[in-house]
Length: 229
Length: 386
Image (tube, one colour):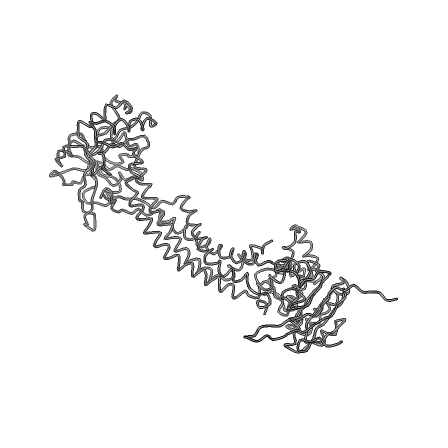
């Protein structure tokens, strides 16, 4: 007897190209794949292969030329700009290579940011932020600004911000690219923990084979085409 | 929901020097704007407070000021017979027949001549003006060549100190007292006995009549009767209205001049704010991309940057108004073109001026910030994140 796994992410014939001068440069060509809930996917490939573009499309910050993307039952390719913003607020957590924390806000306030888009009360928001800080083991650094934290700590704050709204998927663009080996290891362990313990679906773009080892599935992109796994 | 206000506030604090310089530019413009309004308000306040609300001024029909006016003795008697005029403690009508002439006096120090109002007063002139108080010396004796000088005038013109002598109207006049008239135009006048001054200046007519109404609601009836009387060629005005009319032309000129200057300066300050906000947007492209990616709408980004710019304007506005508030300590004197006389007045800071100045600073902040804020809100997320 086979158990049908619930698919969290479905891409069908996704194409994307960019205009460069008068030329239309294809970046992704007819990309189709599925990711089940709670899976950790690593996207690898050389620079310019379209990894980040694919990640942007999955995260709803860029739009496809053709094809469909369905995440958690919602076909995001049909959503308008404002609806996409609402969808991102509720369904996606971002982990960037350079952490992208707001420098004038403390770790606590950075983590709280996505919750400002919900209707939670101040007290409820505090409870959520403290729980997230505990997950990333940074409770003692909650009042520090990003400039007062190490790279690894900043990335942990970024992860706490990414999971604070309990999104369906986490997208990570080279999350260990700016970290030393020890910190990178900690971040990957934390991501692995989120998959195992919280059942998060993670899509990670990476050049680092050690990072890719943590993923359940590794897919390779080359010149905009997804290679067979 | 919007990006927290602390985000905008702290970004301004982070860029302290830029914020300080931009806000200083705005503060200077607001200072000029507020000072202009304070100058106009001070002038009008001085002239309006010169009048008492239940006093009626009678001048010749068509005359704008007492200097241009002439009321014959017979006509003054007809006016004096009006039953609405209040009765003083001595049982006589609270009415003063006054004469106003302009003379030229040299200023102390500079020796530069300026026009000064000489007012011939009657027995009730002081009673009709409760804001006028003798602060030094005594009142001039009727029938004598004695005068008293207004406080703001006595310090600034030669021969106007107590015990000093002035020569005009082919006579020598002795200053026997100094009077203080609050924040009013009388402070810049010299007063003496009306009949003595009329003889000295060979004036057969009075310049004006001033009387108090027993009931101010009767003014319309008195005005109608006096102005309709075929024996009279006079015009009746409530005293505050009379002085307000006098201040209008000068106040208008000051307002137009000041606001024109302010608008020119404000263009510079607004461009300064715009450059600052453009730099703020350029420095925070990645933050904008992150906030948009997290799920903040374009409108939230627009609001955050606009709020930052408004805050910048407000900081400049508060600093400008604060600096301008010290102008209240300064008293300036200028020519009142309506009466051709010297008039001393102070800058006056009113709540309306404070609100208008802060409003003006917010407008500068808004105009300076709206285009950079729109640019920030319209950024492509992908481009911003790269």
